[in-house]
Length: 307
Image 1 (tube, rainbow, N blue to C red):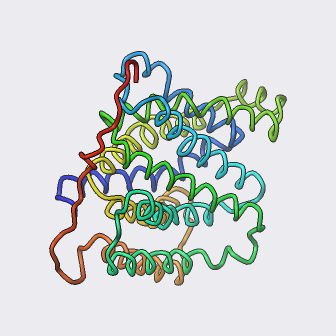
Image 2: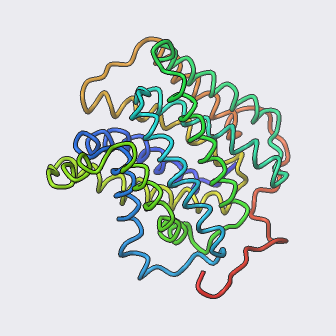
């Protein structure tokens, strides 16, 4: 179980990422999704990369993290939304990253979750399914699968960060962002077209800039920076379940923004999610001796010159 200070950091991340959905929606009212993602990571990297010390993990980890949690996660997610994935369902399905993260961590890092943690994660996923069941009938199969792939990509990035803890979480966010814009921009030119991209960049509105600034400086730089800090301090099975709170916060944010009223199933599902996460985090359930929950000091990250 995390100390209270880290639980507070995780809560801040959840709050930012929950509101992030509304902010991204504002930005993408004008900017096409893939161009929006490419612009987001360009602004994350520049000019900060000239002032932030490299993460000390080696260039392979930097590029891998950028491709996984930048181009992979958001390229797949935004493409799915472009192809018809409902935004509400996308925000829910993406949180199955907790399942991928815990599973990959068990295989790669030998960080085995307890049975109670597994039960909690399963209950949380069931709660998300309950919240999103009304979307399932109308969701096309390909966009749905792309969103699951985005969740898997995020999970891979989490495990990579956990295996090679950066000097600081913020430094990895900034430097890894260099790997994301080019593939995202290529996808944008292919799927969205040069004419649409050019029109969007020459017709920006104040609200679209507010949305872009939020996802860049709060969701990416602050949110993922804190998330990487937590992954460097705790087992993946301790950190990953926190993301299942995001759809709950997102539902509240959507209601505050445009009056989207949650259904009865949504409210019940949110309660089930909260119960499952509390189980996975060890807040409720059997008390036992804690398992090791620190970075692998026996295999410290490489720190070649320049990275």
